[in-house]
Amino acid sequence: MLSFLEREHWEASILKERSLFFNEKNDFVDAVANSFNLKVHHILFKKGDKTIVSLIAYAKGDRIVVPLYFVYSTLWINKISDSAYSTYVTAFLAQLKLHFKNISLNLNPAISDVRPFIWSGFNVAPKYTYIKDLNIFANYPSDVKSSIKKAIDSDVEFIKVPFSEELVAQNMIFLRNSTLLSSDKISGIMSFFNVLKSDGKLEFYICTLKNELIASSIVLVDDVQKVAYTAFLNKVELNSFGNHSIHAFLYDGIFKSLSQRGYQMVDLLGANVFSISKFKGKLQGDLIAFYSVEYKNLGNFLNKSLITIKKILKKALMR
Image (cartoon, rainbow, N blue to C red; front, side):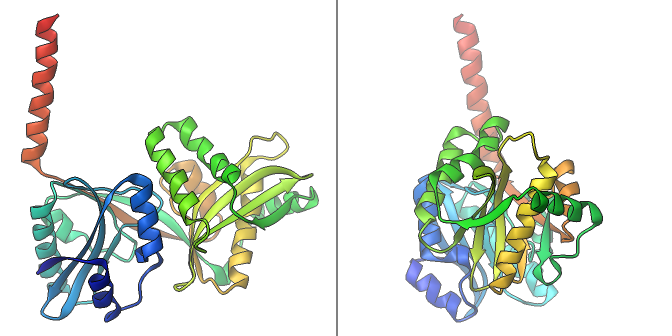
């Protein structure tokens, strides 16, 4: 049975099964909701007293959305048998569809069986990321080692630094230039980082050459699970270094810093563009698939399309 709960009751039920993930905690959820002006729904699907599925859904009206493309959706599925998984997850999705016309989720890599989503009419798109085991972070191929050595020989410095709006803005440049996201989305991301800056879930790293910033990275950290996520890593335009040279040095510094503090894994968050995937693959991580799933109520979609067509025809006839 699917239930919408108050936050406190939802957390109490979850804590009977497991600890909260970093992106389920109140400060993180509030930062997302407030930055993107979204409503939060705390949802459970239970069989008797056992929680089968949990979800914190960010909604705009009757649409569940993915506000942060670099954070997995907070959908969790308990460990159950294969037949029970198929039955209960399909039932959960059927009930969820009664409440929301459109549903978009980025499933975390732990959810590998997406058959219930396919059976439930979702579009399912495979995506990929590299997950780096920090126990073997120095096992690089020769060209990566050469890039790191080049940076060291050139006296490039790697520094972990406090939050600054300048660093956030620098990491947004490529989004603005690429037009991958709307200006409102980018403003929401910047607001999210600003709200979350003092909660210990963000770390900032830079590389400098002769006190000049040449590259920086924003990393999300889960101090409980000891997993980190490289949300952004970008180079300032500077002719003295190629992208791979400074990126390799920056990644290596991040891996070492996190490893020294007991972190076990780093999700490099994305391997879906050929050039990016080719480089990240050299960092000796494991290529992992995850899924982006989307459901659109066909009747609702056709109705909106019909309204749009009528508006276009009306304008054309009035000319």
